[in-house]
Amino acid sequence: MFKIQEPSEEVEYILAAISYLPFVALILIFTSWKKHLFVKYHAAHAITIYLLSFLLLISYLIVFMLINLVFGSNFNVNILCGLIITLHFLLHFIYVFYLSSQAYSGRYLIIPLVTKLYYKIFNK
Image 1 (cartoon, rainbow, N blue to C red):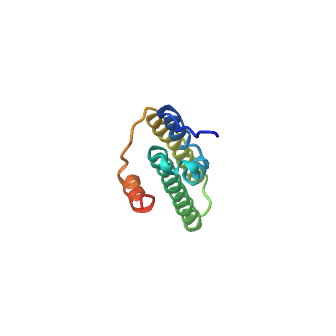
Image 2: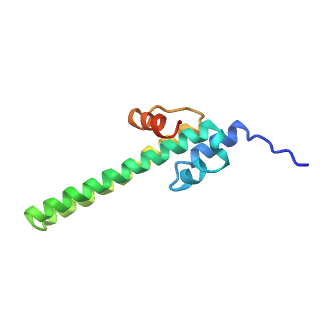
Image 3: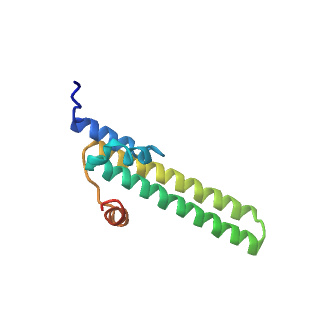
């Protein structure tokens, strides 16, 4: 019948690079690409980075809500909140783009907290 071919290294590099797009990592980590460690490694890193970024955004919002509660609604505080959240999104986008380009180059990156979480959670 049909012979299923193993994907080439270039296909794995492309899949690892696009795993840094939102929600693509969830699809890649739970599909047939489980046996390909390079894709799994980068998909798990992407999920962990997005979760940590989301938690950081939530903490920003909680801090600014508390500041608004204590000091009242202040124009400068609201501008500062918008600036910090905008910088967060910008730096997050640049960092994820860098990670994606490194995955496309075929490199395993070691990000101290994220890699440690990967080995504790995903590598069982």
